[in-house]
Amino acid sequence: MKNKQNKNLENLANNYSALVDSIFRFIYFRTNNKGIAEDLTQDCFLSVVKYLKENNVDNIRAFLFKTARNKVIDYYRQKGRIIYSDSLVLANDKGSRDDFSIQYDVRMIKEKLDLLESGDKEVLAMRYIEEMGIKEIAEAIGKSQTAVRVKIFRALRKLRKLL
Amino acid sequence: MIFNSRNKNLIRELCKLKVVKADDSFKAVLFERLKTIEKNLTIEAVEKLFSEKQRFSKELFSNVFGKKSPLFFPALMIIVFVVIGTGAGITFASQAALPGEILYPIKIVSEKARIALTVSDDEKARLHFEFSSKRLDEVAELAKDSTSDPKLAEIAIEGYKKELNEGQVVLFSVQDKEETKKAADVLADITSKNKEAIAKIGKETRNYKMADSLKDAWEDTVEHNDRAALIMLSRPASSPIINSAIQKKVFDKIIEAEDKIVEANKYLLKKEEKGIDISEAKIKISNAQELFDKARDFIKRAEYESAFNKAKEAYGMAINAQKIVERMNDRNDEDKDDEDKLEMFKIYYIPDNATTSEKQSFNSTTSAVLNQPASIINQVNIRERNHQDDDGEQLDWDEKIKYNDKKKR
Image: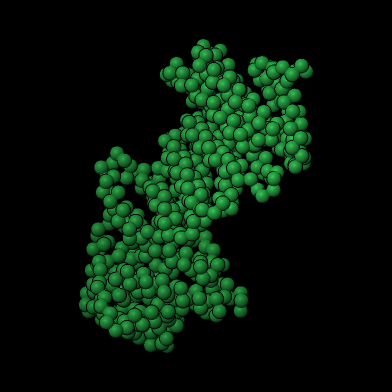
């Protein structure tokens, strides 16, 4: 029990940078606002680490996404929220600094993705951007694996029609 | 059916969105917060992140944002905005910065902010002293590199002096006498530690150009140390006999003054060989000697405060003499020998190991005979006798130097 908790934390620690990126990206695609995405990412990590002190989970990544998803839903539920979208956040590493063509492509695909419903958007993001397995996604959004497969298939078809 | 070629293209497009990432500074701040919840969170990955980030900012500074680059000003503006936006992360990353590095001003500002946010005076003073020792750490770091610019060390030393001074101002802002005494204790403690730190830097460094800055820091520290000792002396403890720690301070000062006079004289003689006129300095030295003799008289009469003051004056006078000669030396050789300068600092400012250990044994005997003023004077007399002929006449300075050299060997 204790070992497993440590393992969870260790796992989180070793992949910290990548996990923060994933969660931030996931929330950012839902909210389109960098500040809010950072706030919610922070909330998400704080509550997950608190939770891991007492409990253990099978898949830390799926659990993080589940929490992040709930945070976003909670956020939208609060009345009187107006979210201003800001311009796209791009990577701040050296590789893409001058690469305008990539920036352009990204902006295009992001605009199309935004036309989808949030449910479709999130499964596509998890499956193809974060490269999560079907089982992981099922765990994160609380649906059966079959339902997830169908959802991904339909979302992809919708997106294709938009392009 | 699902993965036909069009879908593959689509997926490839989606993958491009991976370039959207969270800021490093955001990650750092979040990580700090997580660590407050879970202390076991030690993360190699994050440390790696920071080491990469620091290296990157150094490269950036030298390649793109160097002062001569046309990008310098816009870059500075960007940095200012970034700092306003994501302060905490950069503050965290700036803590290892040295003078001349891009993050150094941020480090200083963050320290000021920490002090401004502190309410209690004790804590404020503690922070000032903590930061002053940080400045010394920076000097030590700079001194490791024999090619680093002495101006950078100067910046750090200026910062050091400022912190030390502000710290003691806060420390002595108390009204209560008892508190003032405590404050003097603290200051004496801090300055002694700092003196050791500066001496250590001076001994280890191979960067000859830093000698001037180090001298500066040393003299400033000595000044504060003296001030603390004087406050301790002017407010003797409730018992009629001055306590051992304060006595030790007076003896230390007297020994320091004596060493200084001997060393200054040695320096003078060395320069005289090189053909520099030392007559003016010689007068100062003999004045210093007179003051020193007076200090010894006061000690014999157990007038510690006056003894300390005289020793302090003697010390100052000896330094004066040395400075006069140094100035002449500088005027004489246009291309002054930096190596020589540092050697001078090492020899004439920092007590070497032999004298230090001798001091310790001397002080341990003084503390053993505490509360018996007569025997303390005997101790001083024994020490004097080491320097005197049987008939009580003082040896002349040359012989004294030879004697000191022998001791060191």
